Image (cartoon, rainbow, N blue to C red; front, side, top):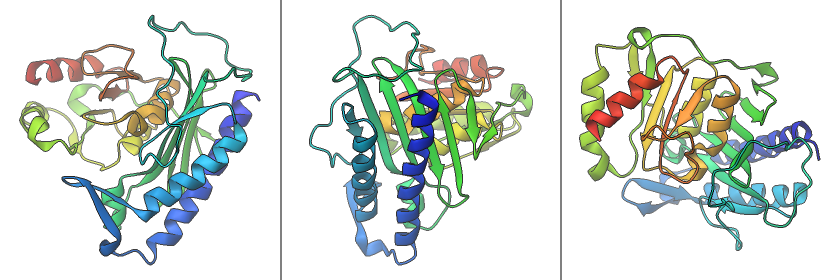
Length: 282
């Protein structure tokens, strides 16, 4: 299956999951929420969305494995990353061998937002081939925006091309997220805000890593940084940023970020500013 066709099929899956989430939101109550960890929540909606997505993706690409946030699949497996960094390869014709491909799924990114009826929240689906991300789809449910990209094909939202912004740091709109691991990250985020507040255009917090990345791709944000997040949080959005002309690294500045828990995504212009600030406070 050709990558563009596969990506558009994944968009349909994401929209179906989004319709389910939107329907359940209408009658949702806080007594249906479970606590995974401190301030880290899950509900039957996350799990139901994941089951819907996994079933549909298995029909699209039966050979692929899964990494899913809620672990509802029985064969979750890490992307098969080789010991050496993967070189860019021609993946325009998806003819997989067993275990070459892995879906990375966040069935409801921004669960805390969702349970409070506070946008944004989204479905995030990525496809890895070895150590490459080849498909990324993020569907923002409230605004009905589907962001998507395939490797080498550019990035889009609802069929419109995406391009990162061009603001320098003094005018940049930054997103500095607050991960669940507050004890470890609180000193870092305090210093980052102190470093940037008053020296940039402004600072925002989205509550959804996937949407923050897509907003960088769309030029709505100029940069986003967060640590202590999972692959399902950032994998799809990272490809969308790259295909929109932006840059994505981990906090160390490494362009290979797929196995880590930190992300810096920018319009490229302000990337070094973000990395230098992170290095100073880490």
